Amino acid sequence: MRPLNTFTTLSLFLLGGISASPTPPTKRWDFNPSRNPAYQLDIVDQLLVNTMPKVESWMSLKNATNGCTLEKAAIRREWSDLSVPEREEYIRAVLCLQSLPSKAPKDQVPGARSRFDDFVATHITQAFDLHSPRKLFAAHRYFIWAYEKALREECGYTGYQPYMNYERYADDPLNSPLFDGSPSSMSGNGLPEPYPGVPQGFPRPYNMIPPGDGGGCVTTGPFKDMVVNLGPRGGVLPNLPRNPRADGLGYNPRCLRRDVNKNSVAGARANYTYSLIMDHPDVDSFYNRYLGQPFLRGDPYPWGLHSAGHYLIGGDPGGDFYCSPGDPLFYFHHGMLDRVWWIWQMQDPENRVNAVPGEPDTWGPGDGSGHIHGKRQGSGSSSVWEDVIDLGWTAPPVKLMDLNDQLGGLGGELCYIYA
Ligand SMILES: *[C@@H]1O[C@H](CO)[C@@H](O)[C@H](O)[C@H]1NC(C)=O
Ligand SMILES: *[C@@H]1O[C@H](CO)[C@@H](O)[C@H](O)[C@H]1NC(C)=O
Ligand SMILES: [Cu+2]
Image (cartoon, rainbow, N blue to C red; front, top):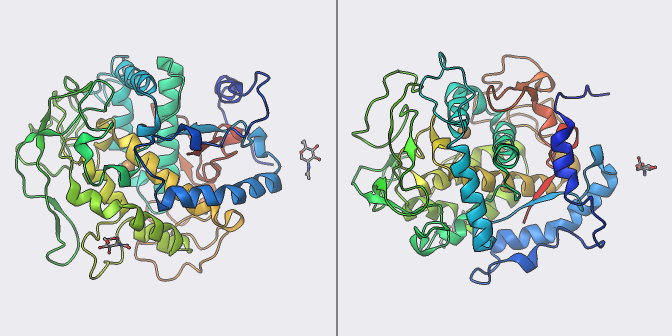
C-alpha cells in the first residue's frame, strides 16, 4: 500500500463537491458545447476528442482510482472558451493572490511581497531540480495545481486554471481574447523596445528566435499596473534593473514586460504539437522533442514546444528561466504543456502514465538508450520511486510518482481533464 499523503480533506471536498449535488447523469467531459465559435477545433483538439474513448476505457479499468471518475473530474478550459464573466473572475483571483501577504520567510526571500510571489520564489530557488528530466513534467503539473488550489482556496475562485492553445494565438495574438488588452484579457503586448531576440542552441540562422514588436512595459488590461518584485536572474532583455541579490530573491520592483512574439509561437502551432504527441511514442524522445531536440533540420521554427510557447510571451519575467512564473501567463503556457503530456499519456495509458524521462526502470516502452539529456540529472542514482517534489512555501512534499496520473494521483486530489 502506498502511504497516505498529508493533504487535508478540505480540497478533496472542494474537488469532489462539484458533482455532489444530484446532477443529471450527463457526461461532464462532453466539453464541445462550451467552445468559442470563433475557433475551429484544430488537429490536436480533434485528437483529444478522439482520445476520450481511450480515457474512458482506461478509467473503467482503473476502477476510479482514489475516487476520481471522469464525471467528477474538473475541466480546465482554453482561455478563449471561457465566457467574459468567467475570464473576469479568474483575473480577479490572480489580482487577489497578488495582494495577499507572502508566506515565504523574509530572511530567505526578502523580495517576495505577495502570495503570487511565493510561487515565483519557489520556481527560482528550485529551478534546477524542477527542470531535471525526471521531474520537469510532474513538478510543473504539481506547481500549476498548487497555484490553482491557491486561487480557489485563498481567493475564492470557483473555476479551474485556464490554458492557452498556442494555435489560436499564432496568426493574430494581439486581437485575441487573451492579449487584446481589454479588461477581460490577460493584458496585451509590451511597448516597442527592440532587443536582439532569444538565443537558441541551434546552428545558424536558427541560433536566435527573432524578436517580436514588443519588449517593453505592458500598458493595457488588468495587469498594466502589476509590479514585478523578484528577479531578474536569467532573462533575455538588456537594461533590466539588477536585483540586489545574485540569486534574484531581493526586492526589485519594476513593470511587467512582454514581447508577444509570432516568430516564436510559429514553432508551437498545432502541427508541431500533433507531431510531438503522435511521432514520439517513447518518453525520452517525447521529452527531447518537447525541448526542441534533436535539431529539426529544414524546419523554419525548430524551437520545440516548450521554448516556442514561453517566448510567445517572453519579456521580463516571462522570458526568464528562473522567474518566468512572475508573468501570470506562465500558468496558461505550462497548462497547455500539461495538457499535451496528458494527451500523450492517454494514447497508451497503461504503458505511458508512469513513464518518466531519463528513467529506464519505470513502466513503459523505451530501453533508456539514446538520451540526449543526461541521465539521472539532479536525482543522484536513487530510484525514481523515491523522488520527492517539494514546493516549499507553495505545496507540501509529495512523491514524484504520485503526480503522473492526472485522474487519481495524489490520493485522488489530482482529478481533472483538459477540454
Ligand atoms: C470497483 O470498485 C468498487 C468499489 O470499490 C467495487 O465494489 C468493485 O468490485 C470494483 N470492480 C472491479 C472490477 O474491481
Ligand atoms: C508545420 O507546418 C509548417 C507550415 O506548413 C511547416 O513549415 C513546418 O515544417 C511544420 N512542422 C511540423 C513539425 O510538421
Ligand atoms: Cu519551470
